Image (cartoon, rainbow, N blue to C red):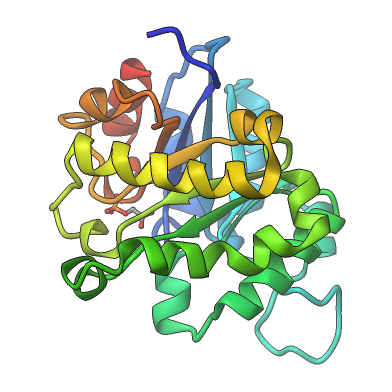
Length: 255
Ligand code: PGA
């Protein structure tokens, strides 16, 4: 396929792989550079420095990102991590708005907007996650939920300016995350096309064309090829199948 955009394979390790397991993973994995694609892993905070040192030692073509950040730069926020701390650790990429953050940590479209704005202002590249619940899909509300999740972001001039440059999206239907139920390529393709139509209305053609929309939710080496064959799918955000060097490598081989 003649692709309009580069591919991004992004692993989301969630609350897995402390520094030791991170070092083991990165010692084992071999990845060759590809001109049309990037590989990235969103690692737990505590594993970030182990990850960045091994990546540079082994010269791996792999970016290391964080799974979250606080929108303030410092202050009385016990247990939180800020952008300046991540920058100091050499991190330039951050995941924002994952459905588990929304579901278990009370993140809302409002707090996600604050985080996205703050991360962009501080120079990070943001992968913003959106996606509907099973009940929302079954009651025909997928499009309105996605529209709502993007509304404030697409109204905000600072965010708008960064689409296609340092702001990209991951569509993750919540019913497909960690369930083994993957969206069919047709379901994913048509939902991605809907998301891109929202971008087009708000951003115009150039930024819309340059914005990556990754698919996430039970991606494995067995289904990734068919998903990647869809013109609107620009890569994968992969949880479970990114945890073992062999399967991450198998996904990279399909890119
Ligand atoms: P999964 O997770 O690949 O294990 O379904 C994806 C994600 O939550 O990013």
